[in-house]
Amino acid sequence: MKTNIYKRERRFPLCAVMFLIVFLCMTSIQPSWASSKSRFEKLELFTKVLNLIEGQYYREVDTEKLIQGAIKGMLGTLDPHSTFLHKDIFTKIHEDTKGEFGGIGIEVTAKDGMIVIITPIEDTPAFKVGLKAGDKIVRINHKSIIGFTLEEAVEKMKGKANTKVVIGVARNGVDGIKDYEITRKIIKTNSVKSALVKKNYIYIRLTQFQKRSAITVSETLKKLKKEAKAHGGAKGIIFDLRSNPGGLLEQAVDVSSIFMKEGVVVSTEGRNKKDVEVRYVKKTGHKEYDLPLAVLINGSSASASEIVAGALQDSKRAIVMGSRSFGKGSVQTVAKIDVEKGVKLTIAQYLTPLGRKIQAIGIKPDIELEMLDNNWFEEHRDDELAVIREKDLRNHLTATIETKEEKRLRELEESKQRERRIKSINARKKKKTKSKNNGIFKKHVPNEDYQVLQAINYLKTYQIVKDIKI
Image 1: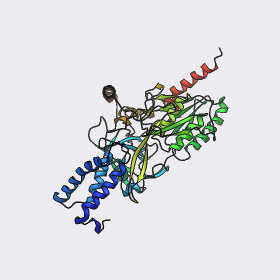
Image 2: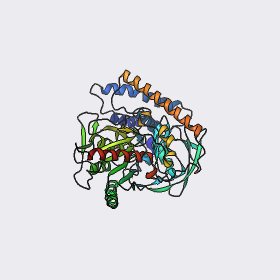
Image 3: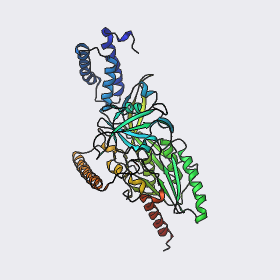
Image 4: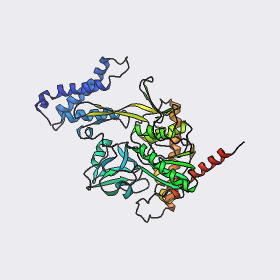
């Protein structure tokens, strides 16, 4: 709400000071050679433009709105995850990881001014109507959201339970914009799903890292091991992290600790290379060291999923199978500017136990598997080809500073990958018939999942080799 301090005759000096304070706070970690004088000289350009707008723009302007827009633009030059949080967003920033929230059930990111779906969360309204990874959300309730920040778009999609929202998406290979009418729900995701496959193999799918996820995984392991005793005992574990967008870091550490005896799970490296925070394996809780373990990932496995996959891979505790993960390996913090506003800022990046960086690189599986030959993943095949990864985002933070030659080679390889994806999608379009279920996903059946079955084949081979006595 405006007060009399924003009257026109006093607006410019006060707002300039306001912006200056924010600007200097944001740049307080500049190198020593960046003098205060140079900052003031650069800030002079901003004050000139603001003065010009206030004096000559053909309508009265809201100076506070202009300054907030300038701050958004400043943060927009950094990376896709650093952003300004206005009042409505700032007060709700902590809702996402509580395991229960009002919405439609999708994980999204921002790319080139558009909101792109990383993955629909399983069993949520968005998942059930057929939204897919890679879909670009271009309008909400028939109004364009092109140019919206990620937080603004998310806020538009949220609402009271049992109210409707219309999401308009553009999809690769499909002409025009398709609207999906979705009824919002209180999202109570059952993050752990399980089954006993082929009588002796424990299958656990973790869809998100929420509170109690590690406890539930442990309880599920105990339950399925007990069931497997009737068939000669458990012979291996398939831990499915495909399309898991991440969640709570602490749960990633706890889940990794179930399978690891000791050592580092993950560390973070800040701007100062000496500023490293290390998370170690926890000694307490249920432990599962003996059974061979296969971890499944794909292009929508992000953040906490990548931390767990990287930890189990580096420690040689598991074989990682599937396709390269999303590459969300940066750490954000929310800094409070005042009682109503804040800034979400990237401050560090994650490292695997062997010091590998995840950011914009992802976790490369030990064994690459295509998603083939099963009914449920038939609905997802185009998703894996069209999936947006961290490295595809504008201004994405690179794990290391690239040389010109490294950049040229990377862009060449990315161009080749895009061509291969387009060819594959076009080839499948010719064979694709209209789905009988109108795009709504079928129930996942692990016994019919090609990648799960391939993981079991690996675990069988592992057991045979282990049992051979030389």
